[in-house]
Length: 300
Image (cartoon, rainbow, N blue to C red):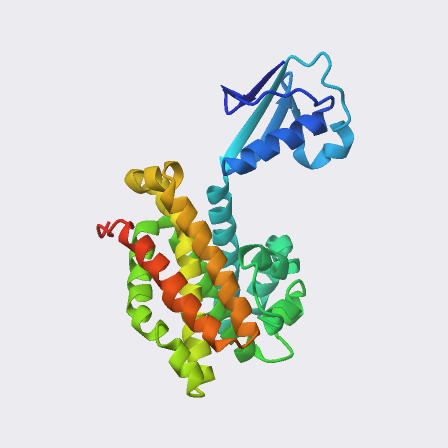
């Protein structure tokens, strides 16, 4: 039996699989590890619906000659999703500002999935949203009347839209222009380092709010940097070689991510000494080492 992925023979041996669902599970594991998503499947030229696994999943692979799979890079799928959600919210916002209730109703009808499940779609993009984020926005989605005339008033809805839209646009930029984003974020992180090294002093002098605000900002920027690095590796060959094939860079990013988790735990325990030590001796040196190997933005 041949298994082809985008017309290329699968370079993983299938030994224990007896059914199509078992083959699919194994292939999906391979695809996920390589940043791909399955979008179409055919067995001996018979195209199968991916969302109908219960109908054909138990089929034996005995006698099957060929399985063909069509894939798409995960980042392309994420980018499409970002554009869909962002476009929906933009259109909804414009209709509200123009007081065009029929347009809102039509939008809710034409894009019913997004309208009814906007919170879930946004949650797929932003997996760490705090509880209660965008409450006004999510509470009316799916109901054309409430979407056009929200109980809390349009201003409350517009305020949340004006917070969410830039976040979506930033994620789009991370995928489409990673070199520019990484250069900008690295500059911001570098500018914060001298202040971050003084966090323990802020804590010891009772300036906990200032310290927390600074660390949250620093952590958010660092996470944004981590999130964009795979996209940078995708478009920058030199960095890709260091990011994927080198030993130090992957280890550095993994180690730094672990130290940031320790920092969050230290804040939870209000351990000012550990917070200061982590930042000064563990996190900042690794951040500086990471930034040193990042390519400069060429302005393209």
